[in-house]
Amino acid sequence: MSLSLDSIQRVLFIKLRHIGDVLLAAATCRALREASPEVRISMLVPAGTEDMLTNHPDIEEVIPLRRGGGWRDDLRLIRRLRRNRFDLAVNMTEGDRGAILAFLSGARYRIGIDPRHKGFMGKRRLFTHLVKPVYDGRHRALMDMDVLEPLGIERKDPQVELFVSAEDQDLVDGWLREEGLLDDRPFVIVHPTSRWLFKCWRDEAVAEVVDHLRIRGVRVVLTSGPDPRERDKLAAIAALCRGEPLVLSGSLTLKQLGALLRRSVLFFGVDTAPMHMAAALGRPVLALFGPSDSKVWGPLAPVRRIIDRGKDFPCLPCRGDGCNSTKRSLCLEAISTEEVVQALDEMLVAASVACPEPARS
Image (cartoon, rainbow, N blue to C red; front, side, top):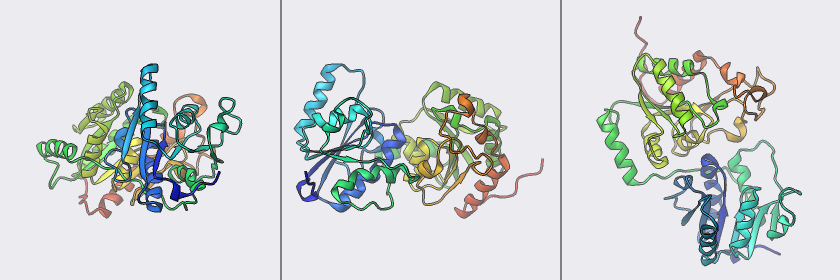
C-alpha cells in the first residue's frame, strides 16, 4: 500500500516511554510539519510526561495514557482516538500496547517498528508499513525519525524544543525574585540525581562542585525528581555542602522546572530528563555520563560538554545498571572533581559569567 503525504491530514504519534524520550520525540513532529505544514499532529504519551509536549506549536493535541484505570478508561481512550479520524497512526517504539492502540485508532495507514518475531503473534499485521530498526550509534532523536521513512521525509538534524507557559514562568520568576536570583545574580542548576541511581556521581564530589561555585560567586539551585530515593540523595548532598544551596527537591512540576531552567546560566547534571529539558531550552549543558551511550543520549544543546571515562573503561557504553548489576558505576565514580570544576569555569567564562578567584582559606 503506497503512502503519500498528500493523503495525510491527521496524524497520531504514539510514544510510550519516559519523560526524556517523549521530549526527544518532538523532533519527529517538527520534521513532519516542515515537510507538510498543514498536517495536524496528536501525540499519545504516558500520563505524567505530557508537559514535555504541551504548548508545542507543531502539536495540536497531547493525549495522556493513564495506566490502571480499567477497561472503561481504555474504552474511552479508544473512542477518543477514533473520533479524531486519523489518517495515519505511528507507533514510535517496539511496544505491544502502542501497536494495539495504533490499530484500534482506526487510522487507514499505520506505521510501526518491525517486531522481528518479538511480541505477540500477528503483531506485524497490525501495521500497513514497517520500519526496520537501525541501532547504529545515531542520536535517539534521529533514530526516532526513522518512522518517517515510509513518507519519504528526509531525516535532518533533530530540533527539540520545550515550551513553557506564561503562567508557569511568572510563578517561577516570582520565587526567583524573592531569592534575589532573577536580575543580577547568575545561578546554575545542579541536578545530580536520576531515578536510576547508577547514573549518579559521588555525593561528596557534587558537594565540592557546589561549594566551588559558591566561592566563585555563582548561586546554585539543587534540584531532583520527586522519587523518595532522589529526594534522600539530594538531602545527603546538601548536608555535605559547606554553604546552604537553594534546594528544590521534587517540588516543581515539569513545566515549572522548565521555567527555572530557562532562567539559569548553565545546567550541570547527569544523564536524565532535566538534562534534555535544559538542552531543549537552549541552555549550556555540562553532563556526566557513565553506562549509557552519550552519542545516543547526549544533550542536544547549542553549547554542551560531556565528561565520561570511555578512554579508561573499554566496557563503555555497557548500558548496564552499574558494574555487574551492583547499582554502582565505577566509570562515573572515577570522574574527578577537578576536571568537572575546570569545565564549569570555562563554560561560565564563555557565557560571560564572572568567576573571580576563590578566597584563600
